[in-house]
Image (tube, rainbow, N blue to C red):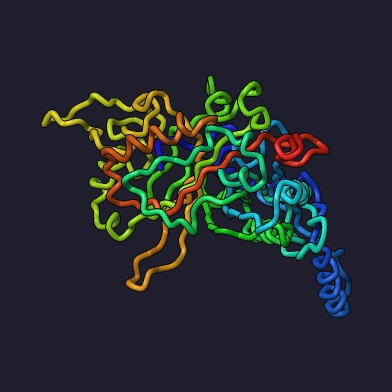
Length: 426
C-alpha cells in the first residue's frame, strides 16, 4: 500500500451513460429471449385490449458492459487501464515433464483465448456460456513469468536480473504455498461473471501442462457507483492511490516499462509485477478514532486531502507544524514515507484489488489488499519504498504481508503473435 494511484488516462470510475449506450445500438449479444417473451405476453393480452403494441427491443448494453480493452498492442492489457470491479490473480506451475515446447503451446492457447474473450466473443473451444449475455466489460488478461519458469524451460540465460528474488522484509509473514509460481495470470473485468468466465477458460486451457499453484480473488468499486469519478477507497475506508503516476506524466514510460533497448531484448516494452497479499487487521484499525487513523495515513479520511489542508491533489506541506511545534503530517505517516521524493525517486504504478476471504474461527475478518504494482525495475520501484516502510511506517501495525511474488511481464503481442513468443521462440 503506497501513496500512488491509478492513472488518470482512464478514470477508475466512469458513470454509466445510458444515452451513450442507446446511441451505440443494440449489442451484438442482444438478449434474444427478451423480444420473444414480450411477444408472448402481448399476444395473450391482445384480445383483452383490442390491439397489441409492437414488442419492445432488448435493452442494449450500458457503457460498463460494452467497454472493451484491446489485446494486441505495445504493452499487455491490464497495466494502464483503470481499476476494474472484480479480478482474479492466479499462479500456475508447469507439471513434471513439461518444458519449453509445452509452455510455448500453452501461451499460444492462452493468447488466443484472451483475444477472443476480451472482444466479448466465446472461448475458442468448449465455451461454458457463463458470459453469453454480457459484453466485454473491460476484460483484461495479462501474462507473466516467474523466476523458476526459466530453469524449468532451459531458458536460464534469458532470465532478467530484475527477476532476482525480493529481499526479506520485517513485516513479512509469507505463506510459501501462496507465493511465487512459474506462470502468472491477472484477470480483471467490470462484471463478475465475465471475469470468472475468463478464469475458467484459462484454467481449462492449461490442461495437463500446468496446475494452479494459488489463486486470489478481488474486487473494487463498480464504475458508476459514485456520483462522479473519484479515487478508489480501500477496506480501511481511506482514499487509496492519490499520487499514482499517470501516463501523461513526464518519464512515465521509463519508470513503468522496460525500454525497447532494454535487457533482455524479449522484455522490451514489458514491466515487472510485484504481487503481495496484504491482510488488514481491521478489528485493530477500527478501534482507532478517525483522527488517529488520519494521523497514521497523513490524509483526511473524508476526501483524501493532506492534513495540511486543501483538496486531494493539493501538495503536502511536510514542514508545516502545529501550535505545539509538531509536524501536522507525522514523520511516521504512510503518505509521507511513500512519496517518491523521499525514496530516491522510486516510482511504481499501483493497480490493486481489495479482497475478503471470510472470517477466522474467532470472527476476525480475513480481508485486505491484493497489492499489484508495476515498474520497469523492482529494485528501483517497490524495494526501496518497502524498505523505508519497514523502518517506521505507522500503518505497519495494522497490516500483515502474507504472500509475495514477482513476475516478468513481457510487452504486448502484435497481431499474429502470442504473448512471450519472443522469449519462447527467440
